[in-house]
Each structure stands twice: as structure tokens, then as C-alpha cells.
Length: 635
Ligand SMILES: Cc1cc2nc3c(=O)[nH]c(=O)nc-3n(C[C@H](O)[C@H](O)[C@H](O)COP(=O)(O)OP(=O)(O)OC[C@H]3O[C@@H](n4cnc5c(N)ncnc54)[C@H](O)[C@@H]3O)c2cc1C
Ligand SMILES: *[C@@H]1O[C@H](CO)[C@@H](O)[C@H](O)[C@H]1NC(C)=O
Ligand SMILES: *[C@@H]1O[C@H](CO)[C@@H](O)[C@H](O)[C@H]1NC(C)=O
Ligand SMILES: *[C@@H]1O[C@H](CO)[C@@H](O)[C@H](O)[C@H]1NC(C)=O
Ligand SMILES: *[C@@H]1O[C@H](CO)[C@@H](O)[C@H](O)[C@H]1NC(C)=O
Ligand SMILES: *[C@@H]1O[C@H](CO)[C@@H](O)[C@H](O)[C@H]1NC(C)=O
Ligand SMILES: *[C@@H]1O[C@H](CO)[C@@H](O)[C@H](O)[C@H]1NC(C)=O
Ligand SMILES: *[C@@H]1O[C@H](CO)[C@@H](O)[C@H](O)[C@H]1NC(C)=O
Ligand SMILES: *[C@@H]1O[C@H](CO)[C@@H](O)[C@H](O)[C@H]1NC(C)=O
Ligand SMILES: *[C@@H]1O[C@H](CO)[C@@H](O)[C@H](O)[C@H]1NC(C)=O
Image 1 (cartoon, rainbow, N blue to C red):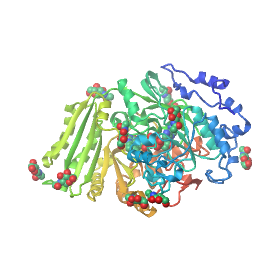
Image 2 (image 1 turned 180 degrees about the horizontal axis):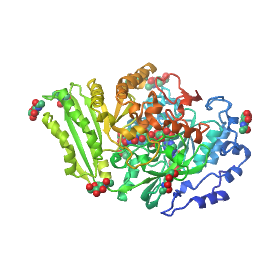
Image 3 (image 1 turned 45 degrees about the vertical axis):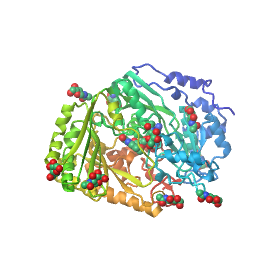
Image 4 (image 1 turned 30 degrees about the vertical axis):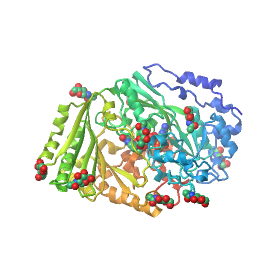
């Protein structure tokens, strides 16, 4: 049988004309990219043989998906009687024009068991394994092997074993909306687990799943700059329309070209319109423009029933609300977004360093850190953001390094004025420090000189984080307790990475971004080390998880309780976070859960700690932490 002929399908042509409006100034009808005009329609489904209709058709009552749920309460798994036959997979591949990719693990060439052993190729993968772009270019690889189950690590071990682990069984190399609709319909109708992989940055394992069919959006790279856009939210001005596979640096480069600022994160290779926006997205520009999700005017999305719709202020507003902060891979597959572009703005940055040692005791060092902490209210009120580290050296001294303090719309003079109380205090304490301050004409060079590429795929640490609310700074007693807990953590020899930032609600929007972000003033990253690294036993993993959850995050949680709008960032969270619903989603959780039931009543989408995931579990054996290496079943 031939693949679907979209061009000759009459109803498809109607859809094309109805939706492909490219004029600027259109209210509530965002323009579509070419790949978004290639859609699956009722007429196309009706033109298929009945057997195809059942497997690839929409969920509108015509298809009884319970017919395909003979495995009881679990999604089907390879080897099950109900797992689709080779012929069915071939037919699916035919319908999507040959873009189905059966998974071969990225490091398969390091092992003989896959029959593709190649020492040279393996060496190249080993060398490059910590480079995020290596994993992005692969249909299924993920940047956090611990949550994958570590089943095919990049080590030259010809006699070792390499298995699929949490990698999905198949990926679809998406190039049209119809590819997404067909994959989603097939997964739903045949009760196959579905995952979405964009870049694979997620370190809770959300873009992975054993026995899954994966929607791989990486190759959707279109970017349009629209100078005069009129949105149904009342916004009029420049926007960028971004395809699902575009990354942060790609956005920044186009924004710089057009003399605008588009808010994004600090790691260049993170996907922009996928997990980042869905999780809220924090940004060095938060002091002016809040969270990245606050800047989104519209999203194009394929929903759990297979339909392609617009979510905006006037079109499916409840879905629009949930897609901005309610978490990735939960409510639909986003194919593109429209995000506001702001005027170009000068930026001052400063690299700040000091340390204990010599005549500077650790106590005096910590007085210098305390002054910084005391300044977080005026610093965030002045629209600034920072990224800093504090660590213990082997010789018992401590180092503080801020890389950098990021001050949009400041002059060197206004910046120095803002810093004066802190720097004066450091001088008064006798702490030598350096502050290397630079002013840039716009966001991009300031970004590029300070941040960018990152290393990923470490095996010896598991991360988590905490968001500390401003209220803890406003009450002196609470401030002492909060700063005390952070200092005590550090004095125990544990590293702190963090930010001062206050996205608040600078754009005055109503969306699903966690209430913790509306109150946060300080965001800290903590980690636990995994004994045994790549060979860690499940006991060693459990031990590391306990340390992270209780010893590292426990004392922080105690001084930033949810009742005071403390919380944790879901996109960089501890996958074993207790009470994750409230920690990750704040007061938004009940409404998000209600919307999950409305928009995805059959649980087509699942992700660890995603909204509604408490109804499911991954039976991954005993890995010592939650991986995606097993069957997905209802609890
Ligand atoms: C090194 C590093 C630096 C980071 N820096 C920042 C930062 O500065 N600011 C910040 O806020 N975050 C940052 N993050 C966290 C980042 O936002 C998350 O990892 C995010 O989930 C990545 O999204 P992705 O689409 O690139 O990744 P993926 O792993 O591909 O996907 C993540 C999640 O989003 C879902 N998803 C992806 N695409 C779609 C889609 N089209 N439709 C629906 N769901 C989709 C997936 O199903 C999955 O649940 C950083 C992460 C790393 C590893
Ligand atoms: C769907 O199929 C199941 C199993 O055959 C049957 O029990 C159920 O009544 C059907 N539902 C509908 C709405 O037809
Ligand atoms: C990113 O860093 C890695 C090393 O971690 C390097 O191999 C790669 O070339 C870098 N990529 C870019 C685009 O700079
Ligand atoms: C792999 O096994 C073969 C055959 O048993 C043996 O000759 C070879 O030395 C082994 N290689 C490694 C790297 O262990
Ligand atoms: C995926 O599709 C794109 C075209 O959209 C193509 O360039 C690329 O080579 C494909 N990748 C794989 C791994 O098949
Ligand atoms: C946006 O949506 C809200 C709620 O539906 C509505 O009150 C408001 O008028 C809309 N804005 C515009 C400019 O239409
Ligand atoms: C302690 O170690 C750090 C890191 O190696 C070094 O920079 C510093 O000079 C040392 N301090 C003293 C007092 O030895
Ligand atoms: C940036 O600063 C200038 C000068 O103080 C001010 O006029 C402008 O409004 C500021 N920009 C924003 C977005 O607040
Ligand atoms: C430490 O010594 C330096 C000179 O070496 C001096 O400038 C500084 O004031 C001293 N600090 C303290 C706390 O004594
Ligand atoms: C893990 O085990 C492998 C195989 O036994 C071994 O080669 C490797 O050195 C071990 N790694 C560590 C960090 O102990």
C-alpha cells in the first residue's frame, strides 16, 4: 500500500487553506509553518482500509481503544501477545513515509551483542559522550544514563552487555504534524507507551520509556521573526515563531540578528519550545520578563485524541494555561510556539570571586557570603540574576565564585552603586575579592561570553534543587534559620550551586507556572555522590537517593516549606522528591490534575513526576532510583 498522499487529499487541501494564513496582524490565528500544514484529517482516515482506521484513526468515539487493552492494566510491552506485529510496524512506517527508526542504543558499537561492534566508532562516542549535541543528534539517547538504567554505557566492552533499558523501542523522526498525529493515534489505539524526545536533556527520565514509541522532534528547526504581531491576549509587537526542535542558542542568534531580546535559559543546547517552556523556564532576563513561559502567546499542539489545535488566550484557553508551566509531555505534543520579542537592552555582567585561607577564616568568609544573601532583595528588585558556586577545597578553605552576576539595563555606574554595600562589607571584613565587570550592548554577547555549552552524562552524582521564597528574607528570624541551613550544608563540605532570581509575575499573566517561582528569591542546586559510579549497585543508588532527599534537600525543605511558597523546580528536580505534586507545581496542582483528566482521559502521556503520574508506576526492578527501564502499569 502507498503512503498517504497529502497533496491530492481534498480535505487536506481545505485544511491547508483554512489554516495557512501568513499575514502579520492576524488576531488569534497564528500562522503555520509548512510542516504544520501537513495534517491528518478525517477524510484521510476515512480513505484508509478499516484495519488502518482502527489503528491510526482519531479518538472520537469511532475507535474503541479498550479493544486494544487486553494486557490488563499495563501498556503493552515488547514480547506481549498484543505487541504489534512486524507487519503492523511496517504498515505504520509506510504511512509515515519511512521515518520510523527501530532503536539501536547510541553506544551499541562498543559491544559485540548488537552485531555492530566497531572500536573506532566506540572510541569516538566515548570521547564525545559528555557533549550534549551527541545525544541530541541521536533519536533516543538521553543525557542522564543513571535514569536510563545505565544499560549501554559508552565504554569499550566488547564482551559486555548492552540492552535497550529505558530507551524506547522505536522513534519517529518527525517532519510533519501528520507524523505526530499518526504516531500518537497508533500509540493510543494499540495501547503502546508514548514518549516525546526533543533534546534528551531531561534528567528525570521524562523523555525515555522502555517499550515506548517516541516522537522525536529534534529536526523541526524553523524560526520566523514576525515584526508586527497582534495577539489575542492584547499584545501587539514583535514575536518569534519557533518550531519544537529549536534550541536556546538558535533562538538567541536570530533574536540578536533582529535587534530584539527573547528570554531563554543559560544552557545553549536545551530545547526551547519543548520541556523548557512546558516547565516554566527560568532565565537571566527574569528580572524584567518573568519566566520564559510568561512570554508565550500561542502554541500549536497535537492533543491526546490526535487532533491538531491552537492553544492561546481565546482558543482552548485552559490548555493554553496548562502548557505554560504544567510540565513537559503531559497535555499534548507542541509543534511550535509564538513568543514575545522585547527591545534590545544593554547588560552589565560581573565575575566575582573570593575565598578563605591565609588570614581569612571560614567564619569571616561566610560573613562575606551572608552579606550577599542579605542583598538578595535589593539585587532582585534591581532586576538582576546570578549564577554562583560555593565549595570546600581539599585544604579546608572555601571558595565563592559568581559566573556572573547578570544585570540587564544597568550602566557600570548603576551596577557599582547597587553592589556597593556588599563590596564595602567584603573590604571591611578584609576579604580580598575580584569583580570583573563588563557592559554589553545587548543580551547575546553578554550571554555568549559567560554561558553556553555544558557537559552532561555524568555518572557519579544525582541532582535536586530547592526554591527559597522571599518571605524568608523579610522576617529576620526566618532569615537566620534559612541562611543557617545553607551555611551548615556548605560547612559540611557539600557544594552549593545557585542563583538569585525573582521572576515573580513581571508580565502579569495567569498560567500554570508554579507558585514557588512567583515567590522565589534564591534557587539552590544540591547533589549527592553515587558510590561506585557506573557500577553502583542498587543499594548504592538507594543510599545516594537517601542522602539527596534527606541530608541535602531535607534541611533546605525545612526552611522553605510549601506553606510559605517554597518548592522545587520540576525541570531540574529530584525524581524521588517526596510530595512532588506540591513541591514541583505549587498551588496549581489541583487545577492541573483536573485539566489532565479533561485533555488526556486515557493517559496517552506519562512522565515520571508529570501531572497525573501518581496513577502509574514503572516496574523497573530494583534500580535504587526511579528509571524508565520497565513496564508502565496503573498503580
Ligand atoms: C545542562 C543543563 C542546563 C539547563 N539550564 C536551564 C536553564 O537555564 N533554565 C531552565 O529553566 N532550565 C534549564 N535546564 C532544564 C531544562 O529546562 C529541562 O531539562 C527541559 O526539560 C529540557 O527540555 P528539552 O525539550 O530540551 O528536553 P527533553 O528531555 O527532550 O524533553 C523534556 C520533557 O519535555 C517534553 N517535551 C519535549 N518536547 C515536547 C513537545 N514538543 N511537546 C510536549 N512535550 C515535550 C518531554 O516529553 C519531556 O517530558 C537545564 C538542563 C540541563 C541538563
Ligand atoms: C469497547 O470494547 C470493549 C471490549 O470488547 C467492550 O467491553 C466495550 O463495551 C466497548 N466500548 C464501547 C464504547 O463500544
Ligand atoms: C560542546 O562541548 C563539547 C565538549 O563537552 C564539544 O565536544 C562540542 O564541540 C561543543 N559544542 C559546541 C557547539 O560548542
Ligand atoms: C572477550 O572474549 C573473548 C573470547 O572469550 C576473549 O578472547 C577476549 O579477550 C575478551 N575481550 C575482552 C576485552 O575482555
Ligand atoms: C531525520 O529526518 C531528517 C529530515 O527531516 C533527516 O535529515 C535526518 O537525516 C533524519 N535522521 C535520521 C536519524 O533518520
Ligand atoms: C484574554 O482572555 C481573557 C479571558 O478569557 C479575556 O477576559 C480577555 O479579554 C482576553 N484578552 C483579549 C485582548 O481579548
Ligand atoms: C587551598 O586550595 C585551593 C584550591 O586548590 C587553592 O586555590 C588555595 O590557594 C589553597 N589555600 C591555601 C591557604 O593553601
Ligand atoms: C531601561 O532603562 C531605561 C533608562 O533608565 C528606561 O528608560 C527603560 O524603561 C528601562 N527598560 C525597561 C524595560 O524597563
Ligand atoms: C589579611 O591580610 C591582608 C594583607 O595580606 C590584609 O589586607 C587584610 O586586611 C587581612 N585581613 C584580615 C581579616 O586580617
Ligand atoms: C566498572 O566495572 C567494569 C567492568 O568490571 C570495570 O572495567 C570498570 O573499571 C569499573 N568502573 C569503576 C569506576 O569501578
